[in-house]
Length: 158
Image (cartoon, rainbow, N blue to C red; front, side, top):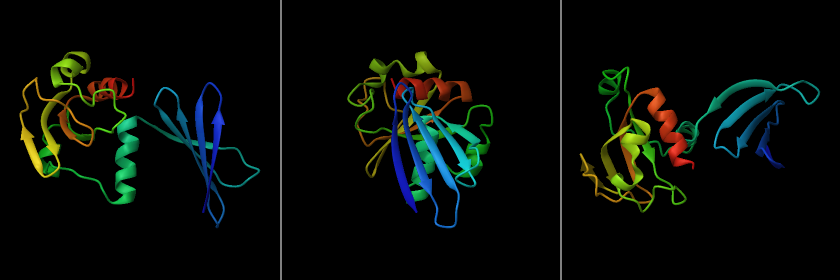
């Protein structure tokens, strides 16, 4: 397997993964934070669009591949909230909310998503108050609608 990275001026970066048995998986990481994926069956063929991911969705898939996925909520409990699923969102060091309090981020009023807990190392801070500081490496346990998660992705990638 070979990986090629290409700068796309004004758009972002393209990552092309070529497999020994043929085919190419392409990820376009756009400057606005979105990720679009494509499949090309052979070098002469056109790329077929597969799907688009938000930043948090891409992070979750990456965690699944590297074996570090963490879900502090039981699957049956998550299903109980069909209209407002619970998700875990890891805060990266470059995140614009790292170092801010929950109040400073305005997360709930700006996105509609609510923080239920913060996983910090081995500790779980349940129902954190608005003056709790969000740190790089924290995993936020959040509840919200799909629209709220879209807004949250925008907030976290500003």
